[in-house]
Image 1 (cartoon, rainbow, N blue to C red):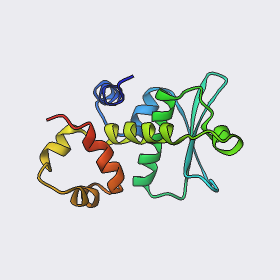
Image 2: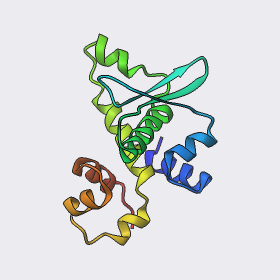
Image 3: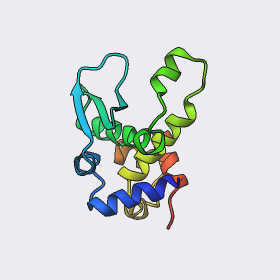
Image 4: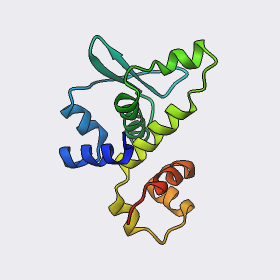
Length: 144
């Protein structure tokens, strides 16, 4: 699956890049709860998509975590990353990077990057409020 294509398709379909609005349209169950040891996670249970987000995060962080978990929902629906992480020696970095890529492709449209194309990665990071490693992931998929 082309990650950027899926993110752009969702943004076009729902006419927003706000993950909370998109999941509302997809009938995803969203749970805000005080989470310990994790910021958010995705669960597929009895044909229901459920995203849990730590209620103590800032709204900006919650939006990123929601988009990241949507990445898991679309890209790794039946993969139990929490189990793999805690109970096996399998490396889940690839899944996390793909979910981060989906989140950034969803949250930061090409129009924003085009508008600020002369900014450095550090400047974009400060402007958009995301870590530089996430900006770098997003810039890999930037088509102008």
